[in-house]
Image (cartoon, rainbow, N blue to C red; front, side, top):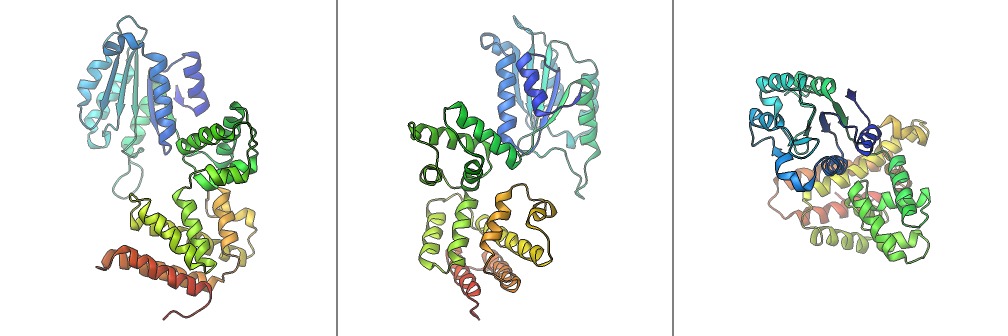
Length: 355
């Protein structure tokens, strides 16, 4: 076959018109797991799963052992299903040749799935360029079966998914409210599915509204950092410290460098938008020029940078860089670094010299 789309994969599963081999990779972890589970449920008869379902972590098992199981005939079933996660083909040219030979004559009763989760695929060389090994693997699977790349959804696709999800549960969600929910809870599909279930459960016949979303939706880290940025820009130190406390004490898994990186990204977004608008670029073109995937990033940046100059944003980025260096080198606690950072950013927003 060849490289196929998500819709084509969905159609294959629905009609049970399977390929004998699949290569599944991409950015969106939820979708990869979702379709692998759908394939397994559709193909594997639970009663005979011990005989017809073989799952491997590719980092722990030699390829020749995996392919021996892939040659087995199914017992009391149409297919022998072999699932392999994160096989390191980039480490061995001989393994690629072995796979190529197997796929040329794969048994009609075998469905072999290689997918990538923790290991990035396509593989890259040390110089960052695409590895020729990746091309060989893709071509081998494309000739014998199907290659599927499942990447992050666009904002329009997420909006459509949310509107449809609410409709299936008997509620109407407008496109604007769907975009608002995305801005609050983020773009992770699993999280958005969970938020849909939760909000619909608590609605109990009421209409979906912005107030309901504010009350029930769990805020993503990016949304809470946006709250922090808004408090800083407004000079609201009480609110800023409150948000910072929540980030430090309620999210113990959030590492300081990741938090600082997320704050910095918000200021980079504002700086880009401010410079682009100063150069006469229409707001609608900014998203494409800087390769932003979601409108919310641009909308937030336009709103938050309204009262800041390019000079103030440059100063803010310098302060953020100093904070990054401090986190990496100082013996002081990270909390102290963030408190000092907030004070400096608030002073810059008020055009007060903090030196």
